[in-house]
Image (cartoon, rainbow, N blue to C red; front, side, top):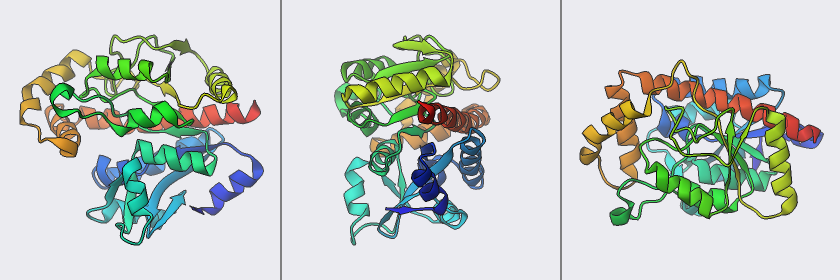
Amino acid sequence: MKFTDEVAAAKSEGAGIVALESTLISHGLPHPDNIAVASGAEDAVRAAGAVPATMAVLDGSAHIGLDEAAMIRLATTPNVAKLSRRDLPVALSPSGNPLGATTVSATMILAQQAGIDVFATGGIGGVHRGVNDSMDISADLFELAQTPVAVVCAGPKVILDLPRTREYLETMGVTLVGYKCDDMPAFWSRSSGLAVDVRVETPVEIAGIIKARRDLGIGGAVLICNPVHEDLAIDIEIVEGWIASCIDDAPGGAAATPWLLGEIARRSEGRSLAANKRLIIDNAGLAGEIVTALAEL
């Protein structure tokens, strides 16, 4: 692992560190929004009194924290590998792609190995619609079930099968926390109608739950759901209408999610993209507040 000076100093001082993914830079957002949002997320973590550690694989090494040149490289180079759990061994070997952007699962793995307790992302993957035929279930859920890194998100992406995703989280023992909300948000939408395990009002309460789970030694994640800001939220019934009108045209496999996200951005006339950018930064800020409280515990 290669640490930036900022992250290395934070580790030696015992300061709070927040892990951040890099797929939003290479795959999630168009240029130059990708650089602006990634930088904004890092700034939000710092404003909360913590240190950001955006992760990626560069030239066969896992990087914990990225400098500006590395971010630009990830943002502008074509065909950057998208790394999940299964892809990390290849990316870290001589036969791997020289550039790899980490998804939720890969970021959680690297965070755990780097001793980082909290990770902030936009929305998690889950059980896909039509799972009975495709067996398409995101590796994010598997990682949440076993890797003890707390994750701050705006809920599962609304293009998923939300009831089955919620059931999977319950079955695998993931503690689902709602930050100032009673039910699980759904990315661009503030409410899915599916209950969280507990509602909390402060980052200190969240830190207490993370510490209690860690002390139990039972593994797996605490998943903190932070609803998108109400000014940018889109009613879930509207989003469902967009999905219903285009899902039959979506490609199969891994290409389905980015295609659907792009199509909904078009149909929403940019509203979904604006919400996406805001929630990523807001989640990073909340994660910074949580690790600051966790360090005090």
